Length: 117
Image (cartoon, rainbow, N blue to C red; front, side, top):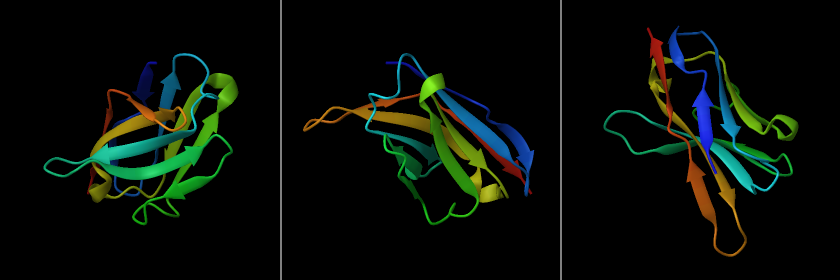
């Protein structure tokens, strides 16, 4: 399984970005897909996740600003980020979980998001 993120970059505070996570093969097999982020000196944290049935969860810090979605036909997951803040600056990683009982999690290589004030 290969996950490739794209769409990161430099944006001013208040701006928007859309991240994409393209998977090799069908994403229908993934029970849960998610976006995580890691800022310098901090632990990786969950930003948002989406189940195969379309249920979503968000970190409190991004609720109302970020939207996660998935397009099974395109084997791609997205993270629409609006009203970006400097504290959103981090490397963003996509993840995909598969399996029952024993869950196997796959990670992408990450994409840098930098929000300037």
